[in-house]
Length: 166
Image (tube, rainbow, N blue to C red):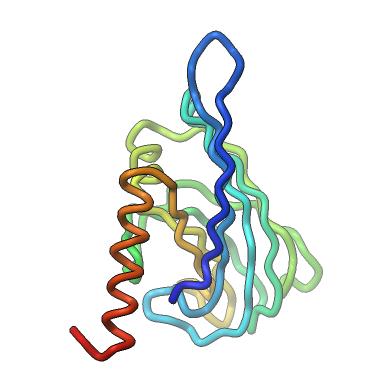
């Protein structure tokens, strides 16, 4: 199935306004781009979402790219296995020779962008010289009725595909 590791830590903010900070770990690899690249490169990212302010923070790293990194983005709206030409926000990429390195972003998104992210319809994508449309990708799966529901449907779809049922 997807190699995306989803670890969730949710805590209530202690300020006067009620909100949540949601932390999601996202795995990136060559099996998730549409179409898959076959790249053996991998990445891991931590995405923090402040549900009150719509502030998004991304911290991650990648290694093993087949070509130097060109840029990275959070894209959406897009479901698993589908691309999106729309960039929600860019990632700052740093590293040696750009086949491995780190990426980050700290942004406040619009209500529409926030809704796309919260509906698990966004993904992190690292583009490289070898794969200009994206070498590795990781879907951002947000926990909750929509996020876990989507994860469950994708899990069922993956099980059905492995068994040869379409």
